[in-house]
Length: 143
Image 1 (cartoon, rainbow, N blue to C red):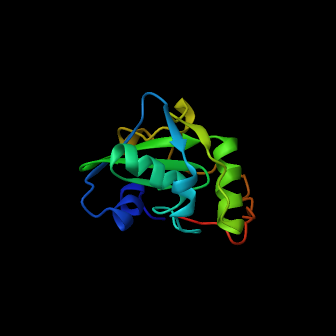
Image 2 (spheres, rainbow, N blue to C red):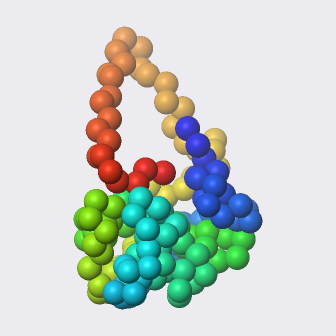
């Protein structure tokens, strides 16, 4: 599995750290942002263009957004309204203009400060492994 920093560096190689945002941010998406953008491109979609216009750079996926500030990236959670617009944009090149809010990650999905504090992933004695099925939505960006 790729690291979060590795994903961000794929689009912005100069970034050296990724941190969780502490406050939400409101972004205005205009018709021009939608018109001059590309589908299935996390760095060039309508919301990413609006963020770039305001902050300098952005990567937007269905569940997360990264706003670039020089060598740092701030990680945000994408709400349902934005998530639906991203899917609509990727399929039909249609992102509704308006005000959208990126939220700070909740405590349960924040980046760990120390990798030793993460759960080890070991199973309890006698437990069996459950096979997870993953559904991938077609014609929608995937980081």
